[in-house]
Length: 112
Length: 114
Image (cartoon, rainbow over all chains, first blue to last red; front, side, top):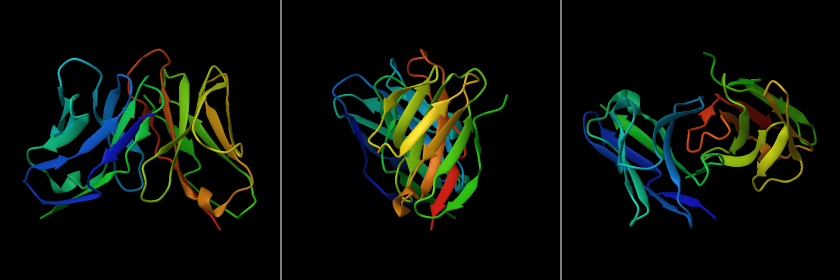
């Protein structure tokens, strides 16, 4: 069975500061990894995905993530956050690209 | 290009009632998955439909059932509603065989049980 652990439930950060949202996963097979963002009263929007190849993945809105197989991690980073990045972020894993297993989410609060 | 659309946006029901939620997938997608997102939690997989059949199911009771139509749209039915069924129900669509390609989500239906 697969599982995802998002290590921080909330991350407060000042505007223009860097941020890292941590995600660890467990799986007995090769996986696909995703980060989604959810703004209030909306569905999930894909930020980025790792399928294979380069372990550094770039996504939308300046976000990037690094796949680390030995540490079974897929941490999300942004070098300089904006107020508009305030949202909830979900890490997800899939073994076949169909059923997604999500973490509990991390709320990113950007302060001015 | 229309994305995933869900209806209704909000719904209020009482315990014991039945509810039907609807989803139209993104153009070009033939697979629909349903997720339940309780307050403060990540989405939980309910089931997935492809070719009008349930292909995968998560850990949800038989009170949760679904249907997919020939035009790929889908319904989620929940019978004998419980207070714990209050949640945001998300529909996601994808294309079968496009391994690893992301699912596209709708904005969800917020179901409140009184």
